[in-house]
Length: 96
Image (cartoon, rainbow, N blue to C red; front, top):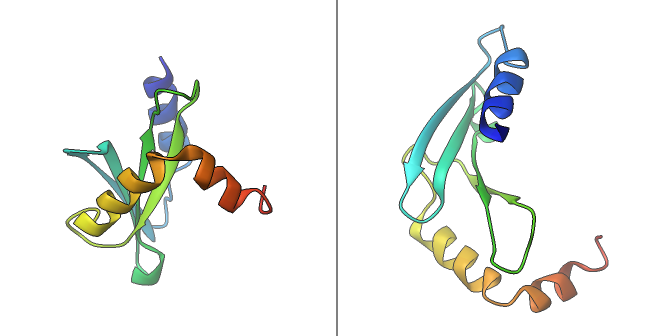
């Protein structure tokens, strides 16, 4: 149900000016990921929703723009940072 609502939300909120576009693919580690393209290439990025066994909610991660998807270094970084959530939350505590 949540997936259908997300697709409906994206449909209703898509850019009708042709300035932006989306492309969804499946990544071996991240699963379904969405490429959010823009005519200004500096604004392009990938977005994925992940789960973690100790968390009840999904969370989003974004990656810099490459037309092929997240780079291997980004996957390694994500794996490393998610391996120790306490350390991640400690680093981000001031921002939250």
